[in-house]
Amino acid sequence: MKQKGIPLFAGKRVWVIGASSGIGQACANALLNAGAKVALSGRREERLSQIAFLGKLGQTLVLPLDVTNDAQLKEGYASILNAWGGIDLLLFVSGMYVPLRADNFTIELAEQTIDANLLGPMRAVALVMPEMLKAHDGHIAIVGSVAGYSGLPKALAYGPSKAAIINFCETLYYDLLPQGISVHMISPGFVATEATAQNDFEMPALISAEEAATEILSGIQKGEFDIHFPKRFSRFLKFLRILPYPLYFWIVRRFVKI
Image (cartoon, rainbow, N blue to C red; front, side, top):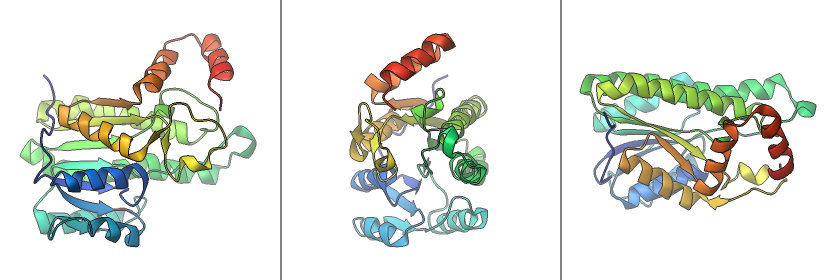
């Protein structure tokens, strides 16, 4: 059984969480240009309103929220149900990244990262899934990271949060495919955003947020579960996963300049 894609976004109801910057903003812009109805969520209302201004009358909803606040998420989804009756695609892009190694690790930052990057998507999925299950239709797309494939330097909290997203998406796929609901696990490499601007190391195969949005929306259109990019980097990291640990750690230290 193959899961469904969304061949055309025109007229589709999409909730983009994390739309105020970076990959989320690029996806929102592309979806608006494709004729989708887009509910824009993020913490920065002014940025969301600027994106909404690009849409046509009735094409957007501006729903500022914090993904760590369950009440705000519920209020946002209630607004969508009231306005549109439901959604066709949940695109969860929001995330938190703080470079952490063992010498600057704090449990407070780790808890904040897990809350935003793992519990945030779980909260959103828990909201939208009941209506999708009733309809036996819908799409859930969650942006993780290739940092979730295996342990990498400076990702002591971020990496585990994204590894958990991989497991969450895999399990969702098992459960939801027979129900007619498609799941899209999105694993970007390095993308030029406000978050990666914190990095003080060379980022291999760095791409723009617009390039990332093109990869994401193309994968959703095709019905792909595993959407990873840029392939020249993500395939290399997938290969590293199957190596014995001594060889894996040697390659990371020698070739991954982070």
